[in-house]
Length: 291
Picture: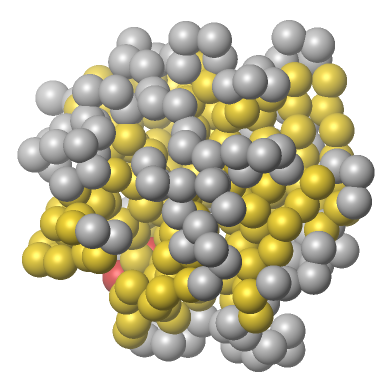
């Protein structure tokens, strides 16, 4: 039987519209994350209890840390760079028009220093891209709806990938930067559970953690797809999660308040806040984009 835990209080009362893409910077000992719809980048130093907020000037779906400093960003329309000194650059790789029905969404850097990021839009219209170190990009998957959380096994032979439009996490064989042999790994529809998988990450034991949008919870899955643990939250829309802290046993969880009715917001005053708990199995440090 799955272990069940409850979180009643948020760590930071930030009230994000669409908090997303938390990522722990091991050198800075700081947590970064986005408010996608507000176009904001946020940075929190737990040791200093200090929160900084940066206005990106446009929506962004995800980011990764750069080896040379700053961030690589999947903006609303393509790929760009960000630094604290100069802010967000213009897209160096434009994929979508700003006023179109598609925009970039979740992403992650792999062990080869490449940044993978997907898009969201009308059913069957989205894609998953791999941004290469030389600044070119490769389309990896098509016919998606909401390309979302992804991560790799420690040996990178397997890739776990979420299409939230399908309410599912899929598993692929990963070979030379390509995804093959797609199989269904976990589906809330198939298991008749509420909500849909959103952001995703793996811990050091190879377990898969997923935030369940409209499900009020985060789940830990074994590599065999068994639910090992459920962490219940006082908000309906947890969005993503990451491991942080000096020992990578701090689990940070972002959430959203977007499109909740006034009645739902009254019942969920912490919607959009940042949540935290300690876990037994540590996570893995993030890779840095090499471009």
